[in-house]
Length: 115
Image 1 (spheres, rainbow, N blue to C red):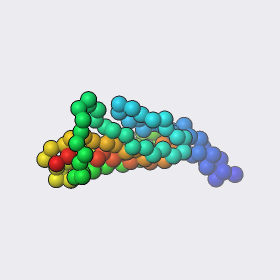
Image 2: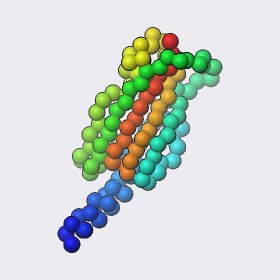
Image 3: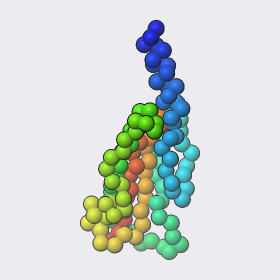
């Protein structure tokens, strides 16, 4: 009985924390209650960008057990880090990718494209 009650409380907490990880970007698609995964442009400009084959990526992960008290994020998802990882001297544009499961675990990845 106690184990069932504990599981129900944890499930309710997970449902209430869904969407707590909020990304600030030009366009944010709606988030799913259980699973969210999308890719979108990170940089917006009105200049045409060349098609680049060279790219680099950087990612950060986030874990929220009892948001915001017990939440942890690690790694670096900066455009500069992605450019260094890909050996880019000049960045033309960047994309981002979000993966979120139950609002508890999330990954945020930045991909930079350039030369």
